[in-house]
Each structure stands twice: as C-alpha cells, then as structure tokens.
Amino acid sequence: MRAHYLDDDSFSMLADRVAQTKCLIGPVKDGDNSSFKRIASRRDLRLDYTNSVVSPKFVFLPQLDELLVYDVKGGEAKATTPGGKEDVVLLGVRPCDSSALSVLDKVMGGKQADPYYSGRRQRTLIISLSCSEPREACFCDAFGAGPFEGTNDDITLTRVGNGYIAVPKTRKGAGFIKEFKEHFRPASRSETERFRSESDRIKQALKTRLSSEDVGAKMDKALNDDFWQELSWRCVECGVCSFVCPACYCFDVVDEAEGSAGSRSRGWDSCQFCTFSKMAGGLDPRPTKADRLRHRFYHKLQYVPRTFGVMSCVGCGRCVMLCPSNIDIREVIAKCQ
Image 1 (cartoon, rainbow, N blue to C red):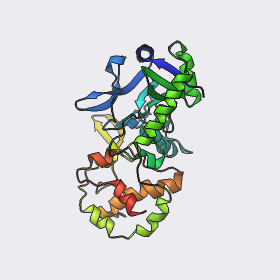
Image 2 (image 1 turned 120 degrees about the horizontal axis):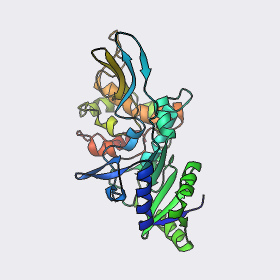
Image 3 (image 1 turned 90 degrees about the horizontal axis):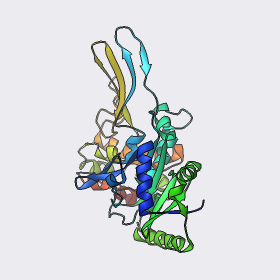
Image 4 (image 1 turned 180 degrees about the horizontal axis):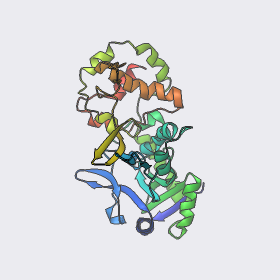
C-alpha cells in the first residue's frame, strides 16, 4: 500500500483528535521505564522509548478479566460484555509486540474463538513504531519479528526527518488514514528514499547470531539432556518470564463471592508455578522444576510452532533482561543448534 507522511505537528493534532474520539493507548514515561496506558493528549506520549517492561498484550488479555457475575442464592448468572464497548487505537507498539499477536490470534481467535479476546481484537487498531536503537537483549530478527517491521499491525510508523512515514498494512489501517486524511499526505520521493535508507540502517543495527530454523526438530535430541536440570537450579519460579512475555497466554480462573454477589474472573498464570499442572486428584505430569522449565522452552520453540504454525517467541528480550537468575532463552536456542 502507498506510503504516507505526517510531520510532527500533524502527528500531534492527530493524536489529540484520536484521544477525543477513541480510547488511545500508548507508551508513557513510568519512572525510569515506560508502560502502556490510556492517554489524553500527545503530551502524554513517549515515543523515544526502547521497549516497555510489560508488553501491551493486556489490551487484549487483561491481567484480571471478569467473565461473568452471578447470584449465589438465586443461581442466576450473566456474562460480562465480551470485548468491551470502546474502539481502541494502540499506538507506538514495537514490531516484536505486534508480531506476538500472531500467536494470540491463533490460540485465542481460532476455530474455538475466545469471545473476550476476539471482541477486543476486532475493536483495536494497531499502529506500530519501528525501532531505531535495539537493545542488547533484543533478538527479534532471529524470528522475523523486527526490528524494522513486524506482523499483525495495521499501520507501521517509521521516524524520518521531522515526522513519520506511515505505511498501511491492512484495510483497517488504510481506513484509519482515510478517516483522518487531513493529517496525512502522500510521501515524497525524497522522503521515500530516506525511509528506505533508515530501514536498511535499522536492519543492520541488529544482527543476532541466532537462527530459529529447524530449532524445534533439533530440540527432539535434547529432551532428556542434563542441561535442563542444571538450568533449573538457577530458576526461582517467580513467573516473571511469563508475565512480561507478549506471547504467553496461560491463565487461571477464580470465583469470588461476597454475600449473595459472586463473580468469575481469569488472570494471568505461569507454567513455572509448582501448582500450574497439578490436577484435582493430585497427579502432576510436570512435578519437578526441571520438568516445568523444560516445558516452557519446548512449548515456545516446538509445541506451538507444530500445532499453530507460529513461533511462540518474538525475541523482545524482556525475559532475558528481567529474569533474576539470568536464565536466557538464547542460551537454550544455542544449545539446540
């Protein structure tokens, strides 16, 4: 689709207009880091960030998601509205995070689509922002998830000069540009050339010596390797790797009641917790920490790719940076190469 351009002034006016008519969520300063929150104007946005600590997957899978409410005494139950009621524009998402939706769409939006996830997904327009300076822990290029552009976004923005090149990727993205056409104009030849030059620079900035090619098949030989036991000695089972991962989707379901009012909600869970795979009768197919740690990496690099056709890692590097025990998925991939 044709590339468009919007200068900084046009971008500011666009952001303010969108914030007035839709739910605009973007990166904001959060202490020394950044996080995604609803914003009221362009002044709240922080687009010079590297990446947020927590991915914006909460827009589609909230950390705590109420599914239904019920009357304990009367037995009447009522489901909450799937997908919310507002149209959402998710702005400034990094390519790795938009690429993670390839996993969530397959798992949560397949033949047996989750109405809560699917409702939010359909009501959300995703505008990603090309990385300009990848972090040391980033390895998105190993999975084709960045750093210049990813997958599953509707529009890709790239910083060029005193504005942004905007490339629509979907009909929804093209429709957004048409809706706010007064802020966009066709990109000039010189802007397009600078855009191509910048894309080449960004791609050259990150050259990971990892390859995801055939990693799942190669892992077959490592299933009973002592490596997993040795790696598990470092794990403290905190679950941070699952919670910061943009492609993890596991959840637990809980009921809460106060008086006659009850509610059922689901919340993020982690396969690294000792109770995650334990069944009602006491049987646990993954009873040891080594079993659970091995399962995490096989799930991401072998089980999901074989079942859904997409890799369940996008190389965002969050788990690498935030693991208190310095467990590194790149070490696992290198071990299996």
